[in-house]
Image (tube, rainbow, N blue to C red; front, side):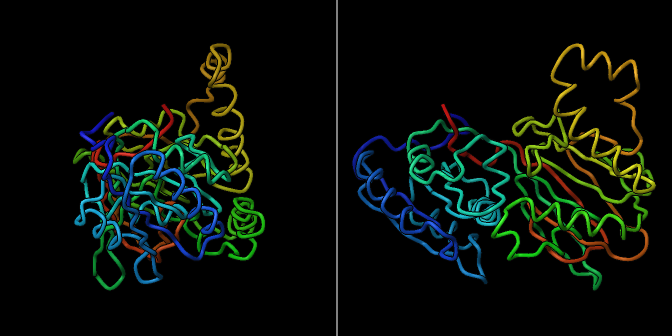
Amino acid sequence: MGGGAKRADAAGSRVAVIVNPSKDGVGELSRAIDRTAAEHGYTRIDWIETTEEDPGTGQAREARESGADLVIAAGGDGTVRSVAEGLDGEPIPVGIVPLGTGNLFARNLGLPVNDIPRAVRLAFTGRDRAIDVLRARVRREDGTTETEVSLVMSGIGIDAAMMATTDPELKKRVGWLAYVDAGLRAIPNSEPFRITHRMDDGRTHRSRVSSLLVANLGYLPGNLELIPDAEIDDGRLDVVRLQPRNVWRWLLVWRKVAWENRVLRRTAIGRQYLDLTGGNRSRDIVYATGRSIDVVIDGAAQEFEVDGDALGEITAARFTIEPKSLVVRVKG
């Protein structure tokens, strides 16, 4: 076990199930929870539904205050990150039962997707792992500020615009492929913008980007590896600046993500080839890592997204990492 999490092994244990009732599979989830909880000595099950007004944060606080030994987050990425925000560093283990379409967090951790009984069993029996949490404090056009929790990655620019323009009905039918549709529509019309950024209170830099991503995990939908070196428990955030100058350069970005990162970097010969050909020195996609980054957008406000959810436009942001502040159940 990691992170000082409580492990319930004796009779009388309590589980809180925080569920998004709008998702498919709630009936199957209920049957699996009842069966598996009884098998593992949980005598009380608290069912807490999310709402449009509160997608999981208040419900997680309720579970924490009521003394839950285990919290199960059943929904999409938005439900899971809201639960993480509500637990606020409390080392109560969180089991994840994916009910959404993207489920990026679950996929990055190798958790069962599209298999509710298996995911439920892992939530009760898996190994506890303490992971990092990203926190983004953003400023809106009217000067107000707010804070968002991120488990996978946050983005400013074209990736956020893609999330904002993704057809929700198409997403229900084809899942992550809906993002491809949104990207094909967004990239030709995207306009680069200028940012001022500073990592770890160091030197201030200015860049012209199409998107800036701050990540805790490296995989995108479709098993594309955007950040090969991202680790979920290294106490550091990974920053990616996408700055292609035209559509042709976007194709080179795609080549790097789909071919170089996913295939070539995984073999010694492939890495040697990249070193010889300069594949690791592309200026279309630039990587950095640290414990915090401050970003100010020079000019018009830009779209902002967190873990695939579009959250409107912002003018500035500060991203920080909270090392090993969430305990999740993973495969043993």
